[in-house]
Image (cartoon, rainbow, N blue to C red; front, side, top):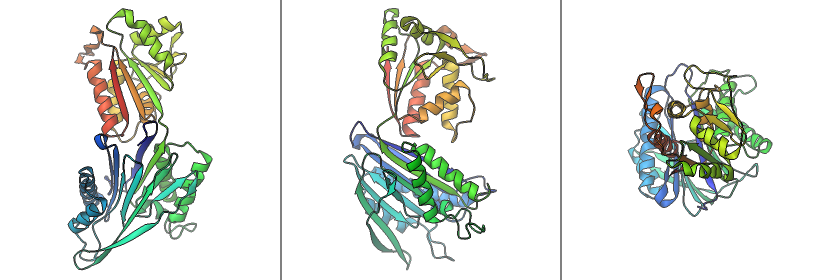
Length: 390
């Protein structure tokens, strides 16, 4: 896949009303050595714990097979032979959509009983030819649909569980639910209105709309996943002073020359950049948070925060499914990370004794914390990260 383009992958889910877990499972993995991206969405039969376990089993199995280079048709066949069948309804206990995107921009997709995926290009729905394959599983026939195409810059692949298109079912305005046509029109309409909308924002919008259709009480587990192929959004994070004070100007040069979003994390770091670039640094006391130190304002920086405490709190936010809607520095920091694609960390290696203890508790050193953040971004959010020490 071309280096200058990036595959943003994101999903959003909401469980059925009065259920504590979601019966849908979405997992994705970037296989770096092969430059492949694999994504799986599975919908467990029913709702609750049982549906969650079955969809998780199905999605995990599919991802494992695909990560080991098993042919997508063979993987689907093996899964169908493995999935248990409901004795009463004579259907599998989970559905699935598997998407495999290779290094040469070839997309292979297999679908079983999930709503049909959407390929949106320049705001318009693109029809894709699908081949039907009939398998026999426990004396019954099941239909698998295979499709393949070359992904292009700006393409979005939108796929979802049936909770999305069935939302609003029984209401006077939508007696048969939102419907796949309603889903298509809403998604393409928003993309035409906001051509650069992120995969994250689009997925969240679609799920939010489905919840609204159900009067804020989801009638079924609902998941929407989006894959968006575009130029990467770049982010620079500078944290910590250089080991050698003679390299302070280098820190300013890196900051000044970066083309993208810029975050400065750490009071000493911010003061160095402020001094070498002759930029005013003003602490912002307008919006304070009891657990996170206040942010500052500096020309050219999209965010200036305190160091270790903010980084540690950001890890907590990144590990959650949603980032709280607050204005504290850690939440803003985590939100910028998730909304970026290629994140470059510059870590200063000068030791700061003040970081060893805080409120009587040992605080991990900066490089350990940033390495944790990098790992979360790579594995959970499929971001590209790099770390440079100075």
